[in-house]
Amino acid sequence: MAKLCVNVDHVATLRQARGVDYPDPLEAALLSEAAGCVGITVHLREDRRHIQEGDVARIKKRISTKLNLEMAAAPEIVEIALKTHPWQVTFVPERRLEVTTEGGLNLTRGQRKTGAIIEWFKAKNILVSLFIDPDEESTRTAADLGADAVEYNTGRYCLARHGREQTTELKKIRAMCRLAGGLGLVTHAGHGLNLSNVAPIAAIEEIDELNIGHAIVARAVMVGFNQAVVEMIETIENAKG
Ligand code: PXP
View: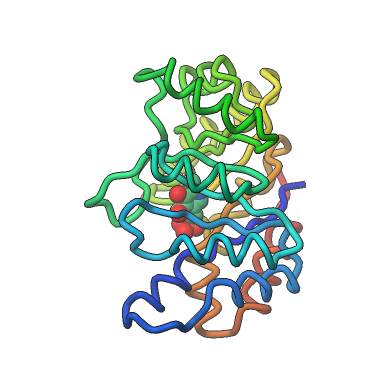
């Protein structure tokens, strides 16, 4: 059954909006753990728009579950990540002007460099996941590059306006999860998931973990972190294929 990792980036977004020291993403991480999630995800962006380097270090030190660090494969961030030693890194594409991550990695470019960076992390026993769109070429390339896991981008599925379009996206994700599993990749999914759209994704047998942030933080503003995380876990656990 899919398990929940809570992305606490947007707690830091609220803090950075005022340049003060609250709310603290660490506090949100500890509350999420107490509510039953299996891991905490943060994205240390190059522009530092939400999570800061100090947050990553404090969260790593204090949580008792796993830390999944989302990051671009930029030299400065790679250095920080190797030093911080999270349980897992997830490579994502990053563009300064984007509001949020817009799509999966393009793995056709710079494969030698990507493969070398993956090896640096694996040599330190840090798991490597690649955030990719649900397509066959990206999935096979991720396996060839030696990644431990792939995270399928559910953005298009979540944004689909018509039932038919959403079903097509869901079928693609299902098929790619099956392929990834056959290639020995652990399978994650995330981006844009919320209480209304998570169930069909959570019901996919091969999916090990879901990374969910914005919807949980938004709900937590209204009902508190404990309830927001518990509701999401219950929805995931009750999902049927
Ligand atoms: N997975 C990845 C790779 C992401 O970049 C993000 C956004 O930071 C998420 C999951 C979480 O997306 P959301 O905040 O829409 O739940």
